[in-house]
Amino acid sequence: MKLVKNIGLVLFLVGLTIFTSLVFTGDFKMTDEIMRSNLSESELLNLETRLTSEVVEKNYSTSLSFGNDVIRIYNETNQQFRDAQQWDKVMYTAPKEFASKLARASSAGWIPQHKSLLFFLTFGLGILGSLMFVLAELKLGGPAGIKNNGVYHSAATNRGWIGISAFVFLVSFYILLYYFPFALTNVIGVVDPVKHLFNPADFASQWFLYGFMYCTVMIVMGARMIIKYRHNNYQIVRTIVVVFFQVIFAFLLVEILPLFDLPARDLKNAWPLDYSFLFEWNVTELLDSGHFGKFLFVWGIVLSLVIIPVMVYFYGKRWYCSWVCGCGGLAETLGDPYRQLSNKKLWAWKLERWMIHGVLVFAIIMTIFTGYLTYNVIQNPTMESKEYLFGFSAYDVRELYGFLIGSIFAGVIGTGFYPIFGNRTWCRFGCPLAAYMGLVQRFKSRFRITTNGGQCISCGNCSTYCEQGIDVRAYAQKGQNIVRSSCVGCGVCAAVCPRGVLKLENGPEANRFGNEGPIVLGNNGFELNQ
Image 1 (cartoon, rainbow, N blue to C red):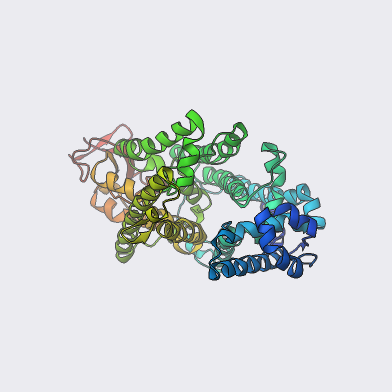
Image 2: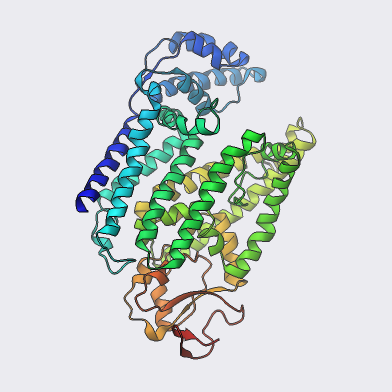
């Protein structure tokens, strides 16, 4: 089985290498016909002369260089119109989207002609190799769970060279995905065969690529999670459920609903994580989409303001963060090898409180500005003066939030920094929904982790593998219940405890901060007498 494991590793690395090389290879040449068929009448009027003289019929070896030239011309032309105050000529398409459209249309040569083959050589080999590697671990008879397995001795899990390499790859990918999507033109084209299963006339976008990768990684690493924690039914069921919610609600439904002329929405996404919920384009689209669109609008409000706090009261934030949320699902699957890297020091906890609640305040302020803007746009789209509130531009406030929190924090740092800061960096320091639910969990919830201090042997497994930076052992040694706003109830601390000291419970709200009554021996071992 070691041979199978090594073959799987080689196949995965081959697929990853081909996937990465697609960013740096290819042929891109925009003809006059391509330019005219992909530009609107106004865009053609504004850009035809410069594009014809500087880009058309020019050969490019990468979509990045092609896109940079297109964006340079687009921005310079727009700036000329602004300087001349010719506002009727200013173009408002996002430059990166404009470049992506032209890069896809201008892709030529061998790569766009062999998308199915490249899909197999990238995703196919990657999936096959990963599953061979993971399943070989099971056949090799490795222990279930974590038994002091030297996680800090591996270069992949102790910020060694493998971890650093993974960090560089993830951060680079997210930067390209968010800010230079045209550089991923060939990579995006690879998943066109999958996109055609939903709509043969449509092509994949950067977000379809991301969604497909997201689901693929969660499924493969979810299989690893199930094998690793096969001794614990809670972890098995939890992993299956969170993968189900991601694949069905965040990917398949989003692709299927537009086929019936319905809005594409992730039904489990809630404010303030779904910070664009009150954006005018979103509200307008929902209200103009018939009864289903109106249902989605009402559902979004009810989910955020009623369902979430009620569920947190009964089950803690674990029902969402560890069972439903896609961000949490990726952290639990792809990020599981890095959970021990979360900082457990006091200063990290203090920083966490300031940052995550600061983001929540920022989200509330941004939502107020956005709601004000949306109301006025819907009432009277021509009243530009209504775009300002307290002297600040509502557009600027929400764009700043989207850039700093929606992309930099949630994407580049939140996932890219798994191998450096641990798998729940975003959930711990930046997610406003986690902060919102954490406040309810801390002060008004039935959820707690009970501890049996008499059985604790201070092995430290629980603290080592707590992804939220909680020193679980300190609570266990005192026999003190764990009631922390940051706890996502993943249950790994209980899964890796060799003595069964920890237990996730939903009990009476009263006295949940401490143990009530003596520790007695029950039918299933030591239990707390309630």
